[in-house]
Image (cartoon, rainbow, N blue to C red):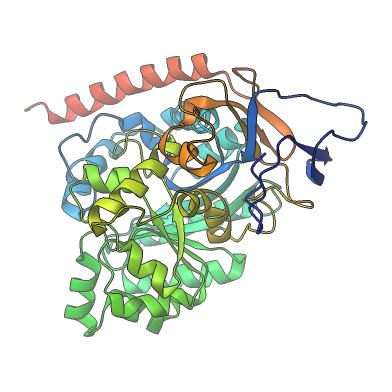
Length: 432
């Protein structure tokens, strides 16, 4: 049992006592004699992974953005935005269900989503049993009608998840200054204050925000965000590839978290994130998959491996990001980014029983004395080693079966929706 608690305890063997969905006690050696005893031989038990940035409906577009960078406004607008213009809301639920099933299967127990159509997303996520921070995605592009419509929709959504035990509501301006004007930013901040909601954005993928802010305000995007009061709210900022080093102390002094998505970054031909500089400045760091039209996988173990290798490659030194640092980014780092570090991210008494089990009899672990467990988890294991997944004391995946979702049925619905998507797009592209 790998606790990832402050002492980083590894218990061989270990036990957890769970009651009412929470960890009551944890220890090493024979477990206490209690009813409902479950033995997991040949398994590694650890905290579930936290995917701090994705767009779950976009599994519908998997394979449809190849050869394009989604890290520029032009690349996103010319590809994904075109598909979204023919998107039928009826297709959202099966797409989200498939995304949740893939995350569960590969060891994610909590994720942060940013998209619209939250009225279709919320019920699907609730059925899955996953923990999630859901952000209503807002793209305004200076359209006054869109501004009022999207803010009203975001407000309605935030009302629906106020008392949900597993879901929290966030606001998701797609990107400040790029497709959200200063006018809507002010209204988004007021809405965030009213609901106590965080902000989930994209930032510094190509330098567009900084160029815009230097031209219009004479300062960097981070400096302008600070002037507007944006940095006084909790924030998830995906990618953060081009932030000037001079701006990092301001981010470190706030509730800002940079969510690194290495596979999406590399597939888009973008620059590596300034990981060492952010670590040195004390910026909060978390890990995400991004959308699976840009990645194309939800396997966060693969993201761990990719980030650690990218850090060594870009910095020109082995071990630039240690295996333990990487694993903590995907667990407690994500929990801190979401404000949930008191609830999840490590196995400790009082926390929610959000955990996963991996099969130690599968390939990659041997020789057990030649590699430490963190190294094995980051460089040899993968999401398909996961055998069991629990959130708040409830099994979501047990003995190779989803317990909350009908994955084959959801895939069949997704295939049908994808075929209809292609038909709709072809119809509007045909010459009249």
